[in-house]
Image (cartoon, rainbow over all chains, first blue to last red; front, top):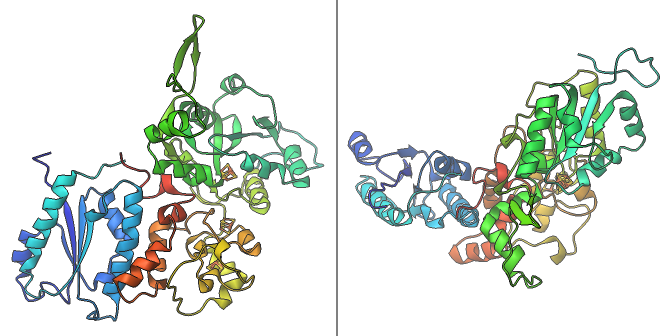
Length: 131
Length: 332
Ligand code: SF4
Ligand code: SF4
Ligand code: SF4
């Protein structure tokens, strides 16, 4: 297990995360980084598709509660993630493999650290078994 | 392509051969064919039913002797969970021009597909060891081969998981429902006999969602706000109001239309036996977005309360379709 490198997909809201940072430099640091317009765009289907295509974890970065540009996209996404975690758990996939962080980071400096942090947790869990 | 003759017409050619079988099913789908009543007479007049284990005494070796493609249509219900079911499915595929995946179990795994929430070991340990009604001091488990009095007895191998029919063989058409309703069965059989079939791979049922044809749809509020979900037996349900407006999870919005809203008519919410609407693979994942938007919660505490009010969400959303969902089964 020690040489296992988890594959993480990171969706982040463009309004809250990394919009002032150097996109190319950030992209080089963060594998599978998908900036989107509003974290509310992330549907359970996208997260399950990520797992189906070999992801070991999915990190969603949204704006703080009450600060969504589209009223409540971040809150919707959060609810979906909590519901989805129940389905993952029922299928023996640790719910901590999907995480949502609600905060602001215009420079995007925190993103690589958050990804690393989650990778470390997932490293202990091992890969998601494909069936 | 036209098969067979109409009732009363003189027969110049041999009647088209039709096989009906059950794999991992409950018999309800076979019963649904019988329930065609008089229409069944028309069907049996137009075709030769050459294999139907529930109703007729034919053996597998009768099928084996037939030429490949000799059967015009095989109507297969039930899922595949063991080696015998796989063998029969493959044999019928070989001998048939068309295979119709019949009922929720064949199309998506069905209710027995919920067994995929447990591993095979869990199931065997419970059924043969741990269930309170089991007395098995010698720890006997079913074996594929056993010697008894010098003779070898065999049993089909029980697979690790439940498969839908199209995960085992190529399927031409799908007819969902638990079981499919008589009008759609009659339409499907007539379409085959008259050669008026849609493109291969089609589901022989409407494309829209059940909500579209549900009489209660007009009572569905613009914005549904649910604090806690209720189960149907916990409320005195109104017979006319949309279940969602009553705080009961109804899966009509993510379920294919075609059943005639039979559950709704008996004041029971839809549980999704017609499977996802056209173009959607995973009805459970789709329902999550809809359900999330209906949960009227302002903070973590309220969300927790709402979540706790949902009994077995995974079982509810994948009651008929776990084997064909993205997650498919429990990992060990
Ligand atoms: S689809 Fe329903 S009626 Fe048909 S075999 Fe499965 S459980 Fe029985
Ligand atoms: S949610 Fe259920 S009760 Fe409401 S309109 Fe749809 S099918 Fe009918
Ligand atoms: S209402 Fe839903 S569960 Fe009931 S028969 Fe129709 S599709 Fe199936």
